[in-house]
Length: 168
Image (cartoon, rainbow, N blue to C red; front, side, top):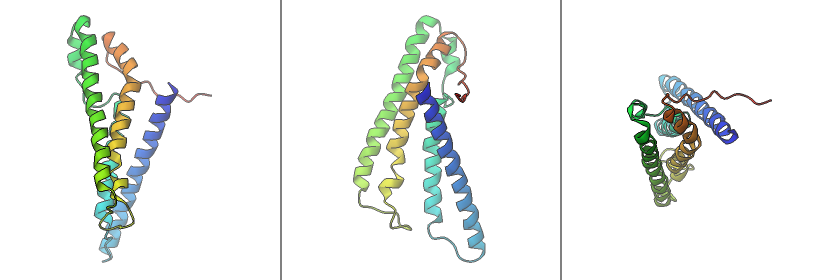
């Protein structure tokens, strides 16, 4: 599935870049603090980066079906109950993330016009956009990976996310 591969590559790249940027920020902040000149923005930026890594990483985990689940329980059920149980679990998960996306948009509306304390040129709505974007990405990732997950679970085997193969 091309869209799933594109989403996977994009999320992997973004999360890796955020992890690298966070490492750079932390190392530079430690060095500057030792030199007696702390960054005033370090704590705020590092916390935001950690939140972004968490939300976007969760979407990547959802795409690969590596988030917390109850596959063992589902696989133990008879096939006649397993199918409806898979659909019910997926519906509950997607409903939660649709609700998170909706609530995240509402939060952004409340935060309009506010800025970070240490970097007054950065709008808080930008930093908190991770909530609705992360919720939407998790929803899309779940929907994209669901057909293969359903087939595998109905066949009585654990889902193994197929590796991304470059197309010529």
